[in-house]
Length: 470
Image (spheres, rainbow, N blue to C red):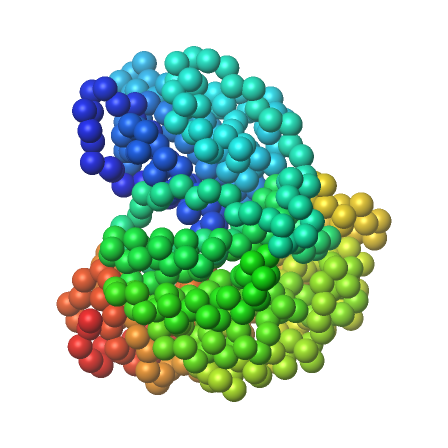
């Protein structure tokens, strides 16, 4: 969970103050910065400390059960600030936004009276007036959730990207997420995201590049391109190769040293995109491939495609262009109908794949998904046991992959100086892929430091500087 940094106050005594609390993925971080931009432009004062805010906006995550629990905890913590307002605090309202708010709407409002309002995505365009009315004590009637895929034409070419608000950065680090698109057209049986995020809509390249230039002006050195499915970028604009052609334009922006692409669907990852990511100078050879499983039977039940041979062939293509490329993925264990043989197929694939990081999730029902209705579910204890087994395996495999990088030349983007200089190499994505600590040297945040890997701690690396930082 992140909180924003302060904006420059204007006529402080007359402005309503607001604090943003953000949970979940990098896409949510962009949403929070767009909301902050709207609020700052409309006369709100952004503060970093929720106890100093007239209203606290909690941007929730509704992806998996643990994320929802974390969001609920954040709402309750914000509500405690409001209860303590009589003891010197100033919080007058707690407002819930984000994926969980959109997904559950009035049901969430009814189950959490601690929140003064639950706002859906359609409220974002008028967020300032919504907050003012809520702080003034007016009642906001939350929406009844609906399948947002039905709000856009089925044909991608007929879709129009929604207006994107100017952003206000809530973090000052050298990396920033940059949204390529929103929504998803896939129909995976375990996933509810398309229902509350809607169908896939690409942003126009000119808008993406304009925002990238603004981020560069804010001191950003690495752009993290995010969406629900980056391999679909451009399909609704008539050109599936738009990402390949846009990547060189992004790295040519003055101040931008790295561009990283997230969330690639293996079944849609075409050779030209692999080559562009692996060989374009300034684009890091980093492949965030959402395999989810390796058994063809389980994948078909997930309404996905692939098998160990095709997935290993995809990784072979990646490593042919960039032998040291970073590869991460997520897998779901204990999916309905998964047999012991299916589980072994997954484990054998993970051994052969040599990925840097693998996230392991035990299957659980998600409201409204097709898999929720499947009748061959595994016992919860069995799902947990299988998830623990695969987690132990990938921890060992990922640690071995990190050890293979000892002696490798890397460039570290410094992001923290709390316990010495710490940052990330090209193969390490933000927050989930481990970090690299520099063994010596005097650096500042945002420096790019040539180094050689000398030691490991799980997936984390230790590197010895070898050249001059820039």
